[in-house]
Every structure is written in structure tokens, then in C-alpha cells.
Image 1 (cartoon, helix red, strand yellow):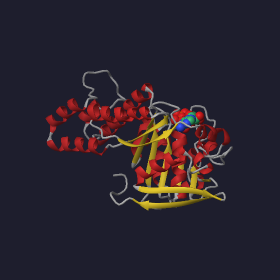
Image 2 (cartoon, helix red, strand yellow):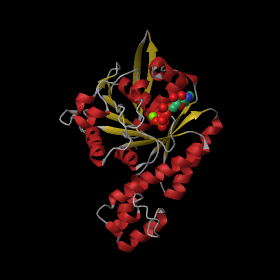
Image 3 (cartoon, rainbow, N blue to C red):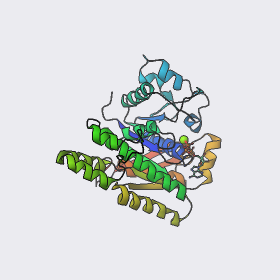
Image 4 (cartoon, rainbow, N blue to C red):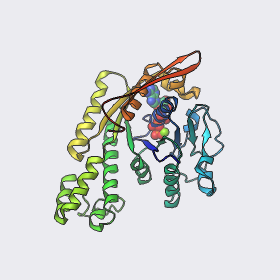
Length: 325
Ligand SMILES: Nc1ncnc2c1ncn2[C@@H]1O[C@H](COP(=O)(O)OP(=O)(O)OP(=O)(O)O)[C@@H](O)[C@H]1O
Ligand SMILES: [Mg+2]
């Protein structure tokens, strides 16, 4: 097992904003650059990542993940036809499959953690249900996808907020008082629920300085990447700035703007054709956008070029910083 596994989760507050497309093409870019990558479909209620990869009927899916308990995680991994890229499908028409129980969720977490790979890309279901947020928070790099629309931006902020408070309540799992006031799942509507950072800090300060240091460290280390999709004009990028400013102001979260993806027929057509746009033309505008986004995540400059039906890669480590900084 490679202990250097880096987990990247791609989530969003609103559905249909381009998570699966971005996640698939990012995973492909990293695989083509020579990393051993696993793409994981965790949208169990509406799994369709296999279709984006051109796989009509995945041989292993949801049922196998939960029923075949003694299989090695490797056994679930499907070939994608792309060098270095394996795929773990969540497909399967099981009624209620969006509502996994705790045991099933913990099995998914364990499977992901045990992957023998350099990187795992998790394509999440939309929205801020806890099962989803827990996968988001499992990742080393957390990518939240948003479009320039106001509704998407509002849901993005609430997604970041839920993720942060989930992380805080987990950090304080040994401290009933703080855990309970930050745990949305209780949602008692009581005055004791605190979902504002300043009030929470006062409450924690009442306890002791160590607790305050712990709280500050969770907030400081919670630094999701923001990717804006379906960008049509330069003005659309302002929505990225707004989200970053608002998450800083109200949540004290340093969201990082990690790139954008243009609105493009090539992206749209890639779904119907079941061919990832990065494979079809690595130099098209959306493909170049993806290369920039993975560059922001990994601190590497990656350039892909297609010649005589083969894809060639050049990559260079940026000198300024390490992974995920
Ligand atoms: N940059 C883009 N240009 C054009 N169309 C796009 C772009 N991004 C997404 N789309 C369209 O949006 C659709 C939804 O994309 P995708 O399935 O990746 O979203 P999602 O966030 O994973 O959805 P869900 O929340 O249902 O999982 C695509 O099928 C495609 O038609
Ligand atoms: Mg999706």
C-alpha cells in the first residue's frame, strides 16, 4: 500500500454544476502525467461517472462494495482504458442507495483510505448531507464547484459552512458541550446551537485556552479550493471573488480560488459521446482550464499535447511551494 495517497474530493452545494465532469477530467490529467490514480464514484443515489468514462455496464458496483466484504479494494477497481487510471464505480439500481447506513459509509471510507494509489479523486453527490460532507472532509484537497449563478453561490457558502462546522464538531467529539452546540444533526432549534464563529470562539474561550487553540487550528486548516464552472465572460469570475470574500468575512475560511472552466459545447458534447474532453482534445480551452486547475492543486505545471492519436505530457514542478499549500 502506498502511504502517500492524496485524496481529492469534488463537491458542490448545488447539483448539476459540473462536479463529475471536472473530477473525471482532473483524474485523467493526473493519470496521464504519470500518477497512479483511482477515480471513485460516491454519488450512490445517482451514479453515472462510468458513462463519462465510456463504460456502459461496470462489472463491479455498489452491491459488491457492501456485499463482498472479503474482497481486496483492488478487486473493485475497473480498467478505464487510460494508462494509470482505475475506476471504482458506485453504480447499481438499489432502492434507497443514496441512504447508506453508518457501517456502509465507514466501509466506503476504509476502502478509499486503503487504495494503493498516488491519488484518489472522489466524485461526490450534490449538497451538504452529512454522509457527503464526511467524504469531503476526508480529503486532503477539497474542491468545491460553483457556477456564476447567485443560487449556486449561496449553496456554495452553505456547503463550506456545513463542512467547517462538521469538522469542528468532530474535533470536539471528546467535549460534549462544544460538540453538541456545533452539531447540526441535532438541530434542536435550541438557543444553544452556535453556528457563528465569533460566538463559538467566546464559548470556547470560557472553557480554556487549549480548546481555543484547537478551534483556531481547525478553522485555519480548513481551506477548500473553489473552481468556477460554466464561465462565459470575464465578469463571471467576480462570483469567485465574492465567495472568497464572504467565506472569509463570515466563516473566517480562506477559500482558495483554483481556477475556472469555460462554458463549452466540447464539454457538453463529451457527455453524449462518452469521451472525456481532455482525451478528445487536450489543447481545447476547457482541457487547458483543467490542466491549470490540477496545476493549482498539485503545484505542478502540466501540459498535454495530442499527436498521431497519442497524448504526450510535459510536467514541471513549480519551485515555490509543496503539495496543497
Ligand atoms: N463547462 C461546461 N460547458 C458546457 N456544459 C457543461 C459544462 N459543465 C457542465 N455542463 C453540463 O452540465 C451537465 C452536468 O454536469 P455534471 O454531471 O458534471 O454535473 P454534476 O455536478 O456532477 O451533477 P450532479 O450534481 O447531478 O452529480 C453536463 O452533462 C453538461 O451538459
Ligand atoms: Mg455528478
